[in-house]
Length: 86
Image 1 (cartoon, rainbow, N blue to C red):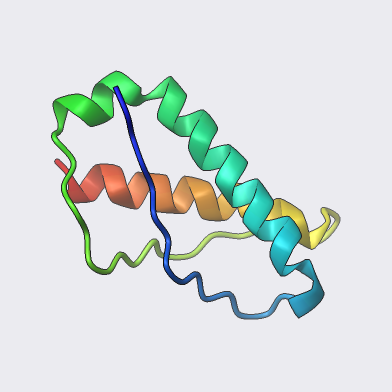
Image 2: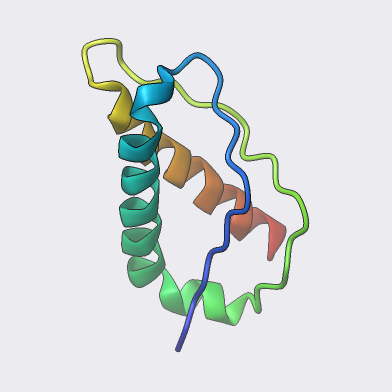
């Protein structure tokens, strides 16, 4: 079973541009983790290509490094993908 996420563009507002790679790394690792945990659920929904996906918004506690926003981003994206495939 193969699940693939392809994100052509991720637009972030309010983050230091120097944090973009750290944020992207956490988005990738968290999406991979979520895909492993929920693989059967995703496959049963028969996901399709989604041209554009608005994953909404999330809040990251100020005391955490900006890179940790990647976890919130990944969860928002994953929830939106699951909703788009139901």
